[in-house]
Amino acid sequence: MELSTRTEGAYTVVELQGEVDLHFSPRLRNRLLSELSEGHPLLIDLDEVTYMDSSGIASMVEAYQLAKNNDLDFGLVGVKGPVLQVLQLARLDKVFPIDDTVGSRIARDAG
Amino acid sequence: MNDGTQGAGGEPRELAGMRFRARSDQLFSVRELVRDTLGRQGCDRSEVDGVVLAVDEACANIIRHAYGACAEGDIVIQIFAQDDDCVIRLRDYAEPVDPEAVCCRRPRELRPGGLGMFLIEKIMDRYDFTEAADGKGNVLEMRKRMGPSTAVGA
Figure 1 (cartoon, each protein chain N blue to C red):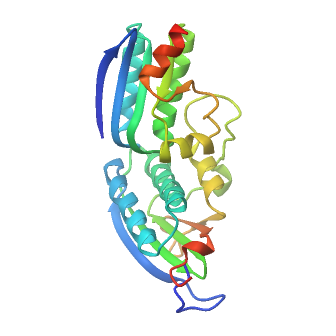
Figure 2: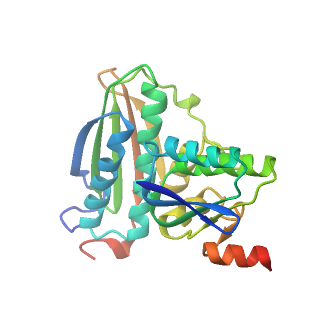
Figure 3: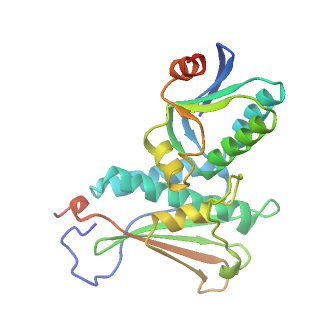
């Protein structure tokens, strides 16, 4: 599992690659909460994620709650395959703000 | 899952198994074992993804709750084919777990955690917790009917 961050527009984009499970999710959780604690609007790019379990979902839920509590923009992009499957199973695919790409989210914000 | 060597009500046939330390860094190998084993049986990819997730969640629950932070031990996974069913058996050597205490939270509210059993229940057709026959640990058996189009002998 790889995690990197970059800046696009007003957003810090946390880009993930590989499989997110109980072994990796504490690192993901820490990074997401750290970025939000510093006041950065956040997008999580899941385009290269090939697997995610409930611990990864829980990290994103916690981050989304922190973002809402701090009035910070938050969203997911590149959701597909097994990640979409687990979000649908958990009935969270309609809860998270989801866009196809970072560009489409930024365009929607500007809309 | 039926490869033509067993009839209706056939005995379970073990396809693969592994014993591993109950640590999160072992989960990748467990997922690979389940993916490879069911993939070789010609199972549908999305169904395999679901079973992989259910097994991962079950193992994570054993690591976090059965053994917890203060105990170490092993988990044994066995994968069986029985008629059109995929059967996964997970055995640990932790203190006995009260099946009534294993909750399945419906995600009616947005909050982190507690989704593992809900996902297992959604994905698998049935699951049963029992105490190990030798009284040392727990056995979780999960079963799922795999689609007929995925049967090797179809």
